[in-house]
Length: 359
Image 1 (cartoon, rainbow, N blue to C red):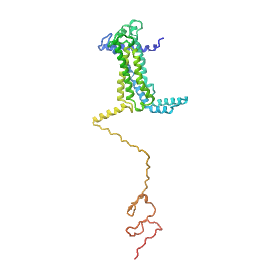
Image 2 (image 1 turned 30 degrees about the vertical axis):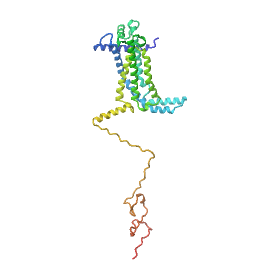
Image 3 (image 1 turned 60 degrees about the vertical axis):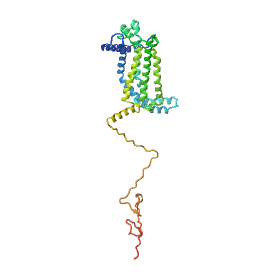
Image 4 (image 1 turned 90 degrees about the vertical axis):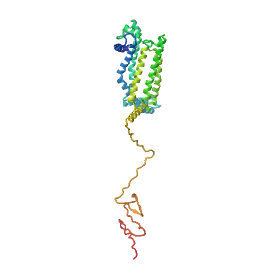
């Protein structure tokens, strides 16, 4: 039983896309038969597939940003249940984690959708290229428009001396091995820089800490290593496909990160600096929002303001009394310069009468 039997419809679609791309290139002036036309048909396959996946790419960006923004809350949940291994705690932790994903409208699998959907196409292309020789000899049935004659043309097409169906471990041609080795290095390097561009430039500082960030950093180096080991078993055409896919991803991510960076990331800081420079070149001065510094330390209690009665403050011995000293009690003015005045205004009953001078 063939385990990859379910890939047959995808193989049929891949074969037709390659064939139509080749026919379009022939119409534009490239030579028919074996040649670079079939190499560029694989590049055309990548472009068509990636254009169809653009809506999923934006969903991936949205999901990745959602995962970045919930990192502080995720770390709080992990800290809350740290060291608790009982089933009730594990169940509560899973429930709170799922509620957190639902709150932010994201999940860890949404950011992997483009890669997951490309995997069947990758394996279908692998099977198409791996079956070129049996199809050309009549040992395998045609796949869509790729019959014996077309399969022989594709198999005979080469890139710098390496045939599209050549595999590093199955060829004795040294030139083909050098070309395949260079393609493997290019595939691993583009994979590394694509992931690094996404994780290091488009993530806030809070998302670069914690267990998930450590896992992403580890995968940054694990994926290129996996491709380096497995690349020796890929046909040249598959290496061309994967390298072209990585280059497309790098360009697409570069544009997205530059135009729509994640909040709090290094890319956002660089975008603000670019906008400030452009504004300064046009003579536009952006006013910074006033920063109100919050008081530190003990809060100062507000002082109570006493209400002052109508009228001017009273003068006692040449000194103006503060409003707190003026009250409703009777006040007698002291004599000034040894002279005595008449009864003070506003004296109440029972006040002693001032002494009259002797005649």
